[in-house]
Image (cartoon, rainbow, N blue to C red; front, side):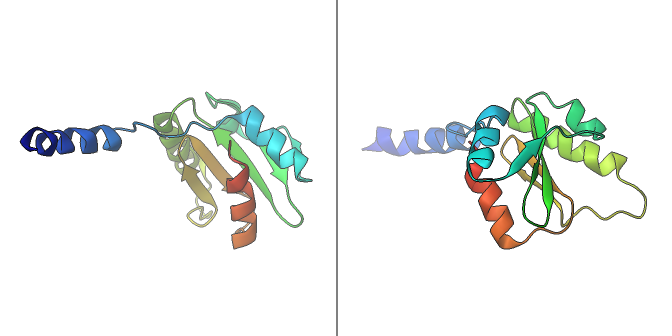
Length: 125
């Protein structure tokens, strides 16, 4: 019993270090969005997306679009978020249009509806 109690902190530490985290891919996510009637194309004109280690694309929804950018790992996605903050225009607020989920970064054209966020996040594969 005491041995099991001592192993509990080790298991918690491994979980905190990312054991079991999901890595999303551009190919699988693109396929899901396309299968659900989104128009998906290149993320043209986006310098940050063009340098992503895991790929990137732009998905057009009914009244908004999102650039979906992937890092090879979660730390890469953090760097992508930092780059978007660094390269944004001085009068551009991105806090309500830039989201990170694991190794994926979503940059919306305009503030997304809850339904649009749920739709795209459901397709992260």
